[in-house]
Image 1 (cartoon, helix red, strand yellow):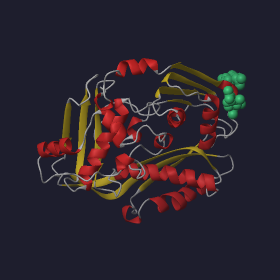
Image 2 (image 1 turned 135 degrees about the vertical axis):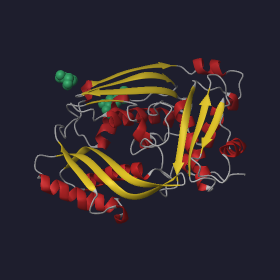
Image 3 (image 1 turned 30 degrees about the vertical axis):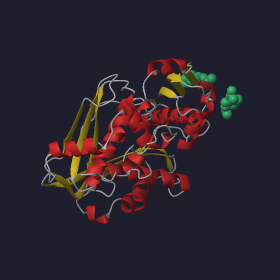
Length: 364
Ligand SMILES: *[C@@H]1O[C@H](CO)[C@@H](O)[C@H](O)[C@H]1NC(C)=O
Ligand SMILES: *[C@@H]1O[C@H](CO)[C@@H](O)[C@H](O)[C@H]1NC(C)=O
């Protein structure tokens, strides 16, 4: 039994969220997905004027991932839908800017100058390895590959006065689901030549780099068999791969009013803006909210000693440049748009097309 389908669940949940936002930008959605063998359960709450065809969205999402012929008769959808009146009543009499956080909690953002994306190299390489396997599967470059793959990269670093300087890749682990025909030797050669050597810059690879290239069997190309999955189980690959901290809240299936999602995006935006402005080389930004209050109850920056200015000064720069009320984050980052399904794969951070990856010009 593999817990292989967590990411598929994230994608289904975000595809459903996108379907609502495409029709109704004010839709409030909490959508969870569970997969077990060939049964899919989708459950949650929606407040929206839109009607969506769940079966069609679920089926199309799974086919886009690469599984064919999934049985539409085995979907169960338990989404309670209410009319928008309830929410309007809650928000009545408040300007959008001052709408309070819907929950309490603490969210983190992280950035580091070790890659162009200002993301940790370990995580960036892992995402790129998975993406390369998927691209080659789709264009025929790896004819034996099937949709399930995972990758993990271990990097040796030097501590450069608090910043992280990657020295070399220590170990690469890749597991890929494959068909019956391919031989182990071919499998490993293809992954070395077409995936690892294409994705990982050669300066990081040496004779001592260790490779674990592992074949995975047990799924059917027709449908995700013998596996289980659940939305929100991959919060570390969704964020920074174990670097920095995590507030614990999952992203997928939640609209922007879920502060665990929108404030984590904003915290990444801040962290990236600070590193991009060369105020520090590496930083973790923390924001904390209380239910019903618009402004965060606290903001904290930790630059790991890599800043010319103090962390207290970084905090003042954040306060001067960013309005962290939920109603303002939504506007600054365009979080009402149906942009989420693509976030559910290869991480929510480091993708240049998203506004939280576009550093803000800072007034110092
Ligand atoms: C639904 O899935 C269950 C469990 O995998 C299976 O036994 C059942 O035959 C499926 N139902 C249909 C209608 O395909
Ligand atoms: C939903 O989509 C499915 C699959 O495309 C289709 O068979 C079904 O008729 C649609 N249902 C509605 C209510 O439109």
